[in-house]
Image (tube, rainbow, N blue to C red):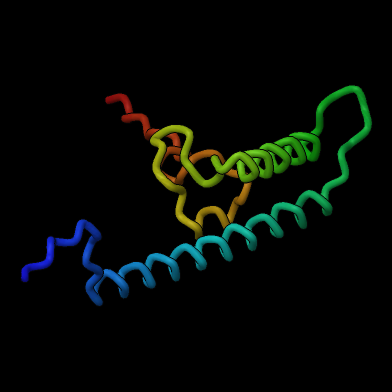
Length: 114
């Protein structure tokens, strides 16, 4: 007697390894996000907003850091606002509040007039 073909997918060992690798990458990604969150909170704690009528550099830095934390909470953190690619982790470590990747953040060079 023949059994009907199962409609359930057959999982092979290569798929299991692939899933495990993806989970490892995801765990590493979460650990990096937590490290960046701590870095942002440390930077925020180190800054004291200036009290005065005009905005200071420290006030702007506080606003940038708070905006980065907000993007992190909304799961929009680490994506370049210009080209929409992921900003590499190393670039975020240098400036965790950044909005653009190095490629988009660098202003285009102007050609020298002849």
